[in-house]
Amino acid sequence: KWLAYDKANGRVGAISSSISIVASLVMLGFGLFGALDIWLRQYIEHDILLALGFFGVLGFGSSIISLPFSIYSTFVIEEKFGFNKTTVKTFIVDMIKGLLLSAVIGLPLGALVIWFYYELGELFWISAWVLMTFFSLFMTMFAASWIMPLFNKFTPLEEGELRTAIEVYCDKVGFKLTNLFVMDGSKRSGKSNAFFSGLGPKKKIVLYDTLIEQMTTEEIVAVLAHEIGHYKKQHTRQSLILSIVQTGVMLYLLGFFLRMEEFSLALGSGAGSFHVGVIAFGIIFSPISTLIGIGMSMLSRKNEFEADAYARDTYDGAALASGLKKLTAENLSNLMPHPYVVFVSYSHPPVLQRLERL
Image (cartoon, rainbow, N blue to C red; front, side, top):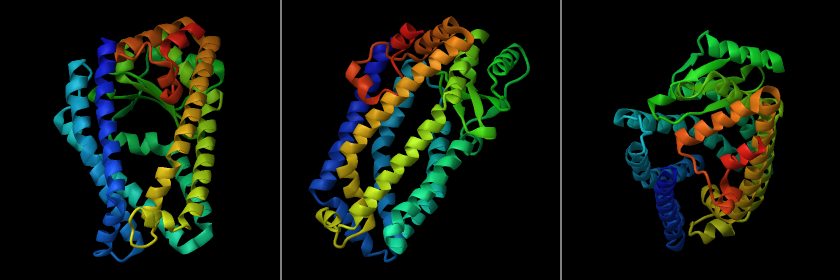
Protein backbone atom coordinates (compact mmCIF):
# COMPACT_ATOMS: atom_id res chain seq x y z
CA LYS A 1 0.00 0.00 0.00
CA TRP A 2 2.82 2.43 0.84
CA LEU A 3 4.40 1.74 -2.55
CA ALA A 4 1.16 2.52 -4.40
CA TYR A 5 0.78 5.72 -2.35
CA ASP A 6 4.35 6.77 -3.09
CA LYS A 7 3.91 6.09 -6.81
CA ALA A 8 0.66 8.06 -6.95
CA ASN A 9 2.25 11.09 -5.28
CA GLY A 10 5.35 10.70 -7.42
CA ARG A 11 3.34 10.81 -10.64
CA VAL A 12 1.44 13.92 -9.59
CA GLY A 13 4.65 15.60 -8.44
CA ALA A 14 6.43 14.77 -11.70
CA ILE A 15 3.58 16.12 -13.84
CA SER A 16 3.29 19.27 -11.72
CA SER A 17 7.04 19.91 -11.86
CA SER A 18 7.14 19.28 -15.61
CA ILE A 19 4.36 21.77 -16.27
CA SER A 20 6.07 24.38 -14.08
CA ILE A 21 9.36 23.87 -15.92
CA VAL A 22 7.67 24.10 -19.33
CA ALA A 23 5.84 27.27 -18.25
CA SER A 24 9.13 28.82 -17.10
CA LEU A 25 10.86 27.87 -20.36
CA VAL A 26 8.00 29.36 -22.38
CA MET A 27 8.23 32.57 -20.34
CA LEU A 28 11.96 32.69 -21.01
CA GLY A 29 11.90 31.62 -24.64
CA PHE A 30 9.23 34.09 -25.69
CA GLY A 31 10.47 36.95 -23.54
CA LEU A 32 7.26 37.02 -21.51
CA PHE A 33 8.95 38.23 -18.32
CA GLY A 34 10.05 41.34 -20.18
CA ALA A 35 6.70 41.62 -21.95
CA LEU A 36 4.89 41.56 -18.60
CA ASP A 37 7.22 44.27 -17.29
CA ILE A 38 6.59 46.48 -20.34
CA TRP A 39 2.82 45.92 -20.14
CA LEU A 40 2.64 46.81 -16.44
CA ARG A 41 4.67 49.98 -17.02
CA GLN A 42 1.79 51.29 -19.13
CA TYR A 43 -0.42 51.37 -16.05
CA ILE A 44 1.96 51.64 -13.07
CA GLU A 45 4.62 54.32 -12.73
CA HIS A 46 5.70 53.85 -9.11
CA ASP A 47 8.70 51.51 -8.90
CA ILE A 48 7.59 49.72 -5.74
CA LEU A 49 4.02 49.18 -6.95
CA LEU A 50 5.36 48.05 -10.32
CA ALA A 51 7.56 45.39 -8.72
CA LEU A 52 4.77 44.23 -6.39
CA GLY A 53 2.37 44.01 -9.33
CA PHE A 54 4.93 42.04 -11.37
CA PHE A 55 5.48 39.47 -8.62
CA GLY A 56 1.75 39.42 -7.88
CA VAL A 57 0.89 38.44 -11.46
CA LEU A 58 3.57 35.72 -11.47
CA GLY A 59 2.40 34.44 -8.09
CA PHE A 60 -1.20 34.34 -9.28
CA GLY A 61 -0.19 32.42 -12.40
CA SER A 62 1.81 29.95 -10.33
CA SER A 63 -1.17 29.43 -8.01
CA ILE A 64 -3.46 28.75 -10.96
CA ILE A 65 -1.06 26.09 -12.26
CA SER A 66 -0.63 24.40 -8.87
CA LEU A 67 -4.30 24.53 -7.77
CA PRO A 68 -5.58 21.53 -9.82
CA PHE A 69 -2.75 19.37 -8.48
CA SER A 70 -3.48 20.43 -4.91
CA ILE A 71 -7.16 19.56 -5.40
CA TYR A 72 -6.31 16.19 -6.97
CA SER A 73 -3.78 15.35 -4.26
CA THR A 74 -6.20 16.19 -1.45
CA PHE A 75 -9.51 14.87 -2.76
CA VAL A 76 -8.34 11.96 -4.92
CA ILE A 77 -5.02 10.55 -3.67
CA GLU A 78 -5.39 11.34 0.04
CA GLU A 79 -9.04 10.27 -0.10
CA LYS A 80 -8.23 7.00 -1.88
CA PHE A 81 -5.67 6.03 0.76
CA GLY A 82 -7.86 6.99 3.70
CA PHE A 83 -6.03 10.13 4.86
CA ASN A 84 -8.25 12.98 3.74
CA LYS A 85 -10.47 14.66 6.33
CA THR A 86 -10.53 18.03 4.55
CA THR A 87 -13.94 19.25 3.43
CA VAL A 88 -14.39 21.44 0.36
CA LYS A 89 -15.27 24.32 2.69
CA THR A 90 -12.08 23.85 4.74
CA PHE A 91 -9.99 23.66 1.56
CA ILE A 92 -11.44 26.91 0.21
CA VAL A 93 -11.18 28.71 3.56
CA ASP A 94 -7.56 27.57 3.94
CA MET A 95 -6.76 28.86 0.46
CA ILE A 96 -8.35 32.25 1.16
CA LYS A 97 -6.60 32.54 4.53
CA GLY A 98 -3.28 31.64 2.89
CA LEU A 99 -3.72 34.32 0.22
CA LEU A 100 -4.70 36.96 2.77
CA LEU A 101 -1.81 36.02 5.05
CA SER A 102 0.62 36.21 2.13
CA ALA A 103 -0.71 39.66 1.28
CA VAL A 104 -0.66 40.97 4.86
CA ILE A 105 2.89 39.75 5.49
CA GLY A 106 4.38 39.63 2.00
CA LEU A 107 3.31 43.01 0.63
CA PRO A 108 4.80 45.21 3.39
CA LEU A 109 7.91 43.03 3.61
CA GLY A 110 8.39 43.06 -0.16
CA ALA A 111 7.73 46.80 -0.38
CA LEU A 112 10.41 47.49 2.24
CA VAL A 113 13.00 45.35 0.43
CA ILE A 114 12.23 47.09 -2.87
CA TRP A 115 12.41 50.51 -1.17
CA PHE A 116 15.82 49.58 0.26
CA TYR A 117 17.01 48.79 -3.27
CA TYR A 118 15.89 52.06 -4.82
CA GLU A 119 16.75 54.36 -1.91
CA LEU A 120 19.83 52.90 -0.17
CA GLY A 121 22.03 51.88 -3.09
CA GLU A 122 24.95 49.73 -1.97
CA LEU A 123 23.46 49.45 1.53
CA PHE A 124 20.50 47.56 0.02
CA TRP A 125 21.74 44.08 0.78
CA ILE A 126 22.68 44.66 4.41
CA SER A 127 19.44 46.58 5.13
CA ALA A 128 17.39 43.79 3.57
CA TRP A 129 19.44 41.24 5.51
CA VAL A 130 18.69 42.94 8.84
CA LEU A 131 15.00 43.06 7.95
CA MET A 132 14.88 39.39 6.93
CA THR A 133 16.83 38.37 10.04
CA PHE A 134 14.28 40.04 12.32
CA PHE A 135 11.49 38.45 10.30
CA SER A 136 13.07 34.98 10.61
CA LEU A 137 13.47 35.41 14.37
CA PHE A 138 9.89 36.59 14.67
CA MET A 139 8.54 33.63 12.70
CA THR A 140 10.66 31.15 14.66
CA MET A 141 9.38 32.47 17.97
CA PHE A 142 5.77 33.31 17.19
CA ALA A 143 4.58 31.33 14.13
CA ALA A 144 3.17 28.50 16.25
CA SER A 145 1.44 31.02 18.54
CA TRP A 146 0.13 33.59 16.08
CA ILE A 147 0.10 32.11 12.56
CA MET A 148 -0.73 28.42 12.90
CA PRO A 149 -3.80 29.00 15.15
CA LEU A 150 -5.39 30.72 12.15
CA PHE A 151 -5.61 27.28 10.56
CA ASN A 152 -5.72 24.83 13.48
CA LYS A 153 -7.01 24.70 17.04
CA PHE A 154 -4.40 24.35 19.79
CA THR A 155 -5.49 23.18 23.23
CA PRO A 156 -3.29 22.51 26.29
CA LEU A 157 -2.73 18.80 26.89
CA GLU A 158 -5.09 17.84 29.69
CA GLU A 159 -3.94 16.43 33.00
CA GLY A 160 -3.59 12.67 33.06
CA GLU A 161 -1.23 9.76 32.49
CA LEU A 162 0.32 11.18 29.31
CA ARG A 163 0.98 14.68 30.64
CA THR A 164 2.39 13.27 33.88
CA ALA A 165 4.76 10.96 31.97
CA ILE A 166 5.92 13.86 29.79
CA GLU A 167 6.48 16.14 32.80
CA VAL A 168 8.46 13.43 34.62
CA TYR A 169 10.73 13.00 31.60
CA CYS A 170 11.19 16.77 31.14
CA ASP A 171 12.17 17.13 34.81
CA LYS A 172 14.66 14.30 34.39
CA VAL A 173 16.48 15.96 31.46
CA GLY A 174 16.16 19.53 32.77
CA PHE A 175 13.79 20.77 30.09
CA LYS A 176 11.52 23.54 31.34
CA LEU A 177 8.10 22.64 29.96
CA THR A 178 5.55 25.45 29.94
CA ASN A 179 3.77 25.08 26.60
CA LEU A 180 2.45 21.61 25.69
CA PHE A 181 -0.40 21.59 23.20
CA VAL A 182 -2.56 19.24 21.16
CA MET A 183 -3.35 20.29 17.58
CA ASP A 184 -6.47 19.15 15.73
CA GLY A 185 -4.54 17.64 12.82
CA SER A 186 -7.46 15.25 12.26
CA LYS A 187 -9.43 18.22 10.92
CA ARG A 188 -7.57 17.80 7.63
CA SER A 189 -5.75 14.47 7.61
CA GLY A 190 -5.42 11.12 9.31
CA LYS A 191 -1.63 11.49 9.32
CA SER A 192 0.16 12.09 12.62
CA ASN A 193 3.15 14.10 13.76
CA ALA A 194 4.70 16.10 16.59
CA PHE A 195 6.92 19.16 16.45
CA PHE A 196 8.91 21.63 18.51
CA SER A 197 8.93 25.35 17.79
CA GLY A 198 10.13 28.61 19.24
CA LEU A 199 13.11 29.74 21.26
CA GLY A 200 13.64 30.51 24.94
CA PRO A 201 10.41 31.14 26.86
CA LYS A 202 8.41 30.90 23.62
CA LYS A 203 9.36 27.28 22.97
CA LYS A 204 6.38 25.03 22.43
CA ILE A 205 5.78 21.30 21.96
CA VAL A 206 2.81 20.34 19.80
CA LEU A 207 1.24 16.87 19.44
CA TYR A 208 -1.22 16.00 16.70
CA ASP A 209 -4.43 14.54 18.11
CA THR A 210 -3.97 11.66 15.66
CA LEU A 211 -0.61 10.86 17.25
CA ILE A 212 -2.22 10.54 20.68
CA GLU A 213 -4.82 8.18 19.23
CA GLN A 214 -2.29 5.96 17.46
CA MET A 215 0.52 5.61 20.02
CA THR A 216 1.03 4.40 23.58
CA THR A 217 2.15 6.77 26.32
CA GLU A 218 5.72 5.40 26.20
CA GLU A 219 5.91 5.85 22.43
CA ILE A 220 4.64 9.43 22.61
CA VAL A 221 7.16 10.34 25.33
CA ALA A 222 9.91 8.78 23.19
CA VAL A 223 8.84 10.87 20.18
CA LEU A 224 8.87 13.99 22.38
CA ALA A 225 12.29 13.00 23.71
CA HIS A 226 13.46 13.09 20.09
CA GLU A 227 12.02 16.60 19.66
CA ILE A 228 13.60 17.75 22.93
CA GLY A 229 16.85 16.25 21.65
CA HIS A 230 16.78 18.75 18.80
CA TYR A 231 16.53 21.55 21.36
CA LYS A 232 19.21 20.15 23.64
CA LYS A 233 21.58 19.64 20.70
CA GLN A 234 20.98 23.23 19.54
CA HIS A 235 19.65 22.07 16.16
CA THR A 236 16.93 24.72 15.98
CA ARG A 237 19.40 27.51 16.70
CA GLN A 238 21.92 25.99 14.30
CA SER A 239 19.40 25.87 11.45
CA LEU A 240 18.30 29.44 12.16
CA ILE A 241 21.87 30.76 12.12
CA LEU A 242 22.70 28.91 8.90
CA SER A 243 19.52 30.23 7.29
CA ILE A 244 20.39 33.80 8.30
CA VAL A 245 23.94 33.47 6.94
CA GLN A 246 22.64 31.94 3.71
CA THR A 247 20.14 34.78 3.30
CA GLY A 248 22.88 37.37 3.86
CA VAL A 249 25.16 35.83 1.23
CA MET A 250 22.29 35.56 -1.24
CA LEU A 251 21.27 39.20 -0.71
CA TYR A 252 24.87 40.36 -1.11
CA LEU A 253 25.13 38.50 -4.42
CA LEU A 254 21.72 39.81 -5.47
CA GLY A 255 22.76 43.40 -4.73
CA PHE A 256 25.92 42.94 -6.81
CA PHE A 257 23.96 41.24 -9.60
CA LEU A 258 21.23 43.90 -9.81
CA ARG A 259 23.78 46.59 -10.58
CA MET A 260 24.28 44.92 -13.97
CA GLU A 261 21.22 45.90 -16.02
CA GLU A 262 22.23 43.62 -18.89
CA PHE A 263 20.56 40.64 -17.24
CA SER A 264 17.11 42.21 -16.92
CA LEU A 265 17.44 43.60 -20.43
CA ALA A 266 18.31 40.10 -21.65
CA LEU A 267 14.92 38.90 -20.39
CA GLY A 268 13.19 41.46 -22.59
CA SER A 269 12.67 44.29 -20.13
CA GLY A 270 12.54 47.71 -21.71
CA ALA A 271 14.69 49.12 -18.91
CA GLY A 272 16.81 47.80 -16.08
CA SER A 273 14.46 46.89 -13.24
CA PHE A 274 14.61 45.33 -9.81
CA HIS A 275 11.90 42.74 -10.37
CA VAL A 276 13.09 41.39 -13.73
CA GLY A 277 16.64 41.37 -12.36
CA VAL A 278 15.46 39.23 -9.43
CA ILE A 279 14.02 36.69 -11.90
CA ALA A 280 17.31 36.60 -13.81
CA PHE A 281 19.24 36.17 -10.57
CA GLY A 282 16.93 33.36 -9.49
CA ILE A 283 17.59 31.49 -12.72
CA ILE A 284 21.37 31.86 -12.49
CA PHE A 285 21.49 31.19 -8.74
CA SER A 286 19.29 28.07 -9.03
CA PRO A 287 22.13 25.50 -9.38
CA ILE A 288 23.91 27.01 -6.36
CA SER A 289 20.65 26.97 -4.42
CA THR A 290 20.24 23.28 -5.25
CA LEU A 291 23.72 22.50 -3.92
CA ILE A 292 23.02 24.48 -0.75
CA GLY A 293 19.76 22.57 -0.35
CA ILE A 294 21.61 19.25 -0.62
CA GLY A 295 24.05 20.39 2.07
CA MET A 296 21.22 21.49 4.36
CA SER A 297 19.44 18.16 3.84
CA MET A 298 22.61 16.28 4.78
CA LEU A 299 22.92 18.34 7.96
CA SER A 300 19.26 17.78 8.76
CA ARG A 301 19.61 14.00 8.42
CA LYS A 302 22.64 14.08 10.72
CA ASN A 303 20.62 16.05 13.26
CA GLU A 304 17.80 13.51 13.10
CA PHE A 305 20.21 10.71 13.97
CA GLU A 306 21.53 12.78 16.89
CA ALA A 307 18.01 13.46 18.18
CA ASP A 308 17.20 9.75 17.92
CA ALA A 309 20.33 8.93 19.92
CA TYR A 310 19.37 11.51 22.56
CA ALA A 311 15.93 9.93 22.96
CA ARG A 312 17.50 6.47 23.17
CA ASP A 313 20.05 7.52 25.78
CA THR A 314 17.71 9.58 27.97
CA TYR A 315 14.49 7.62 27.66
CA ASP A 316 13.87 4.40 25.70
CA GLY A 317 15.22 3.43 22.29
CA ALA A 318 12.78 0.54 21.95
CA ALA A 319 9.79 2.83 22.54
CA LEU A 320 11.10 5.31 19.95
CA ALA A 321 11.65 2.48 17.44
CA SER A 322 8.11 1.25 18.03
CA GLY A 323 6.76 4.79 17.62
CA LEU A 324 8.70 5.30 14.38
CA LYS A 325 7.29 2.05 13.00
CA LYS A 326 3.76 3.20 13.77
CA LEU A 327 4.37 6.64 12.25
CA THR A 328 5.77 5.04 9.11
CA ALA A 329 2.91 2.55 8.81
CA GLU A 330 0.13 5.05 9.59
CA ASN A 331 1.54 7.71 7.22
CA LEU A 332 2.45 5.21 4.46
CA SER A 333 6.00 6.56 4.33
CA ASN A 334 8.40 5.21 1.71
CA LEU A 335 10.36 2.37 3.31
CA MET A 336 13.00 2.11 0.58
CA PRO A 337 13.55 5.45 -1.19
CA HIS A 338 16.29 5.57 -3.80
CA PRO A 339 19.63 6.59 -2.23
CA TYR A 340 20.07 9.43 -4.74
CA VAL A 341 16.63 10.82 -3.87
CA VAL A 342 17.52 10.64 -0.19
CA PHE A 343 20.85 12.37 -0.83
CA VAL A 344 19.29 15.23 -2.79
CA SER A 345 16.03 15.94 -1.00
CA TYR A 346 15.35 13.98 2.19
CA SER A 347 15.48 16.03 5.39
CA HIS A 348 14.97 12.84 7.44
CA PRO A 349 16.86 9.56 7.04
CA PRO A 350 14.78 6.61 5.78
CA VAL A 351 13.12 4.89 8.72
CA LEU A 352 15.01 1.61 8.20
CA GLN A 353 18.32 3.47 8.69
CA ARG A 354 16.98 5.12 11.84
CA LEU A 355 15.81 1.79 13.25
CA GLU A 356 19.19 0.24 12.49
CA ARG A 357 20.97 3.03 14.38
CA LEU A 358 18.61 2.66 17.33
